[in-house]
Image (cartoon, rainbow, N blue to C red; front, top):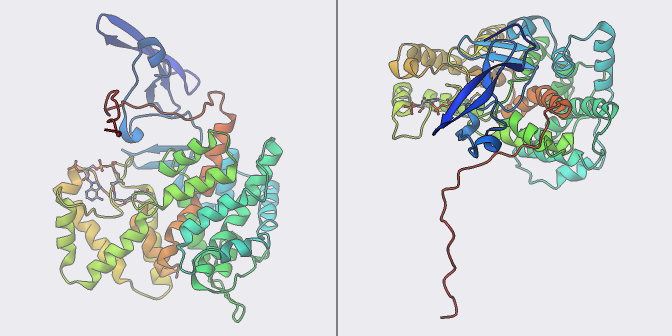
Length: 433
Ligand code: ACO
């Protein structure tokens, strides 16, 4: 096979034999050497489809945004290692990079930050939207509904200029909507955004300030929040991103597509895992000796319990985001002058699993959700906001994937097939007799 080709183009062919016939299938090679069999004409040429539950072995697109090597624990946005971005960039810089493909220049950085700062306000009519929700509404479905409802205020973007404006607007308004969802769940008045604060600082202000009391943002907390957002900013074709692409592939409004992504992210096997991690750690903390019991249950195939925050569809070694977060977790807890029982239990669980054959043989290591919940808790983010924080971080990735799909020359509406296993044709019983 030749390797000196434009990434994503055909480098060779594989042969598929069915009965007496042989079919040539193109092999496409990506920039990091991974190779795919292009089966788009398989059904046309052979009458067959592929069967791949959970799309675990299906490449749905060519993408130039994020590269993951799950075996080697590598994550890069637009070619830049996550470790480097985590150390040196702000969340808005990473958002720009993901969406536009290059690091922002000084002028681009400033004008993007200014554009975002000036679109943070929400239409007054949104107060009525929020007041229609139950008082104890979980902030995550409230956010999904609010972002969907935003599509009723702004027409679907068509030109590139419209898309750019919609993107800035959404990045600016998501923290406001997220904080509104939280304030609603407390029954507190909404706090207007402040343009003099940076992205993470402003979010903390809208979450914690009240009309009676100003909130003084701790720079340690604001920086760790920015770091968390950066680490969650994209993760190629995961469940929620695929949901965004699938909905967007019908040419649905950007905001409607993102709303679908938020809903997909809510599930406990995806973004909802960090809430489940904290619940698990608290349960373990409250019952002496239950860590071992919990691990035994997680390993029992007849028990549905899993060790939350462990395992990943793609990472078969340590999730690089988890190791950055583990260090940040230790640091932030020390800086805030506390200790964390939950962190101690988490580190102990990790230690046990690293020498337990069940976890080692299945390559189950901590994922991003294992330590993120402990940091959120240490900086005062309530448990029911954990997934919302994930959604805030993932937003630029969803947007980048949506815009990439929109410009893709291979663009087609998403429409998988199936192997039907239901009854063959039959007749209804005669109901008159
Ligand atoms: N605890 C115990 N056993 C596990 C765990 C776990 N957390 N995860 C996987 N396994 C076991 C499975 O039971 C299976 O065992 P078997 O081979 O004996 O049947 C084997 O490991 C492979 O697991 P799959 O479910 O096939 O792996 P898959 O790639 O489909 O699932 C997933 C990945 C959903 C993340 C899974 O590991 C899991 O449920 N983890 C816990 C939830 C979680 O932390 N989710 C967050 C993921 S990161 C994110 O979305 C941001």
